[in-house]
Length: 109
Length: 116
Image (cartoon, rainbow over all chains, first blue to last red; front, side, top):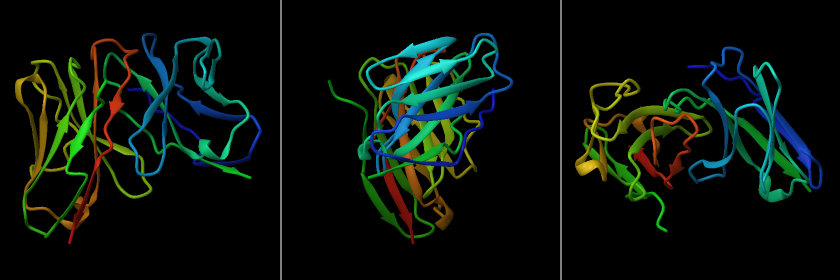
C-alpha cells in the first residue's frame, strides 16, 4: 500500500484559497487518490477523488501531476466552517483503509 | 436515505469488562470497515469485511478484539477484558463495491469508548 505524507497542520484566513499537498511516491498504476474531511466528533466525509490531471466538484479541486507522486487538494475561498482535518488516501485494489495522520486546517477570521 | 449508524454513541466501562459496539451499514453496501481513533490522532484500521469473504483482521491490535458481520449487514465489534488504552472513538464505514479502487467509504458517527 502506498504511504502518504502531508503537512500536520496549516493555518489560513477566511476567503483565501488553501492548497494541501500530499506526497505518495510509491503510488501504483491502478491506485486512485482520495481525500476525506473530518470535523470534530464526526466520522470522515468523502471530498474528492482522482486518478490524474485535474478533478473539480462543488467543494474542491484536485490536481495530480503527470508522475502522480503527489496531489494537491485546493479549497477555494475557505470559511470558518472549513476548519477540519483533511486526509489523503491512496486506494489500492479495494484496500483503501490506510489513513495517515491528516492535515489539521485552521481557518481564522 | 439512511447513512451508517452506530450504537451506542457513548460507552463508559470499567477495566476488565467486555463491550460490544454495533454498526448498521448503508443498505446494499457490501464492504464494512472498523477503525479506531484516539484523541487527536488519525484513523487506525482494525478489520474489513467484504461480502461473504473471510474478513481482513490484520489491523486488530490484540486477540481481545474480534468482530463479526451477520447476514452481510450488521456488524458487532467486541472488545474483551477492556484496558484503559482501548479508550478511543470506534468508527465504522461501509462502501458499495469493495473491489473497485475508486469506491468511497461512508462513515458513521462513531462510538466513544471510555475505559475507567
